[in-house]
Image 1 (cartoon, rainbow, N blue to C red):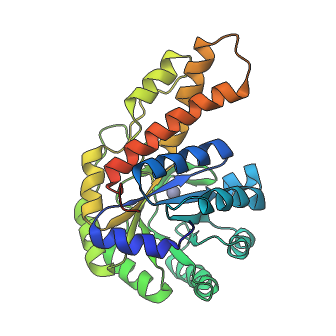
Image 2: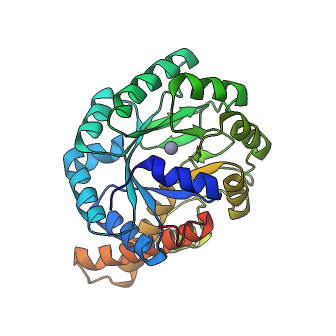
Length: 304
Ligand SMILES: [Zn+2]
């Protein structure tokens, strides 16, 4: 079933677990996420970025998500990830998304507040929740790229939340988008997170927090890929963040790694197979396993 983002996050924030936000851009990834959530009895946020919308078509991808989500008893929110284009935001509202992220984090504070407030006004009337972002998360993710990392200031965060009325806030505490997150081991600024949580008192969101499991890296490299020195966020740090206000954790890179590992292995081992369904089935199996693993880490199993 389809539910509001706010409903999912109010519960996870209160009970100190996190709801997984999974980026989808095709039928196969979506099916795998939904099947994994059903198995784990976990709610989830199904998200499309502006890049995914460009790839799959806005109405098209939304219709498939809506259709599949409505057929299950598991609660799913349908979310726009890193909304920046107002036309895309307005169309998402029209189509029936239940959560919208407005990413004004690269703009000066006053402008970020102004555009975020504008989206809150558009969404409030329709009961849609809004995610804002303050501070910048490094790395590249689809159409979003940032080189200068500015960590979120707890005092400014409070002002931002009060002035905009956002339902949840993406914070920068040292994570980074993409597979190339850290040269050394990741170090999240948990103290800063605690201060932000204390001053904002709303569900917080962690982007750029994929785990980058080594088993996928090894498979990709074994079967012809090349991914040198990639590292993600260790489980222990992720769990600490969830204890301190992170109620929504975004996952995109890990889905890509699982998908690619499955396809590379299948193609190398089955040189004569040309049936797209066979290789997609392998990718789907990898994605399901990855999502189930993620749900366990976030603590959202049996919370549906
Ligand atoms: Zn992000």
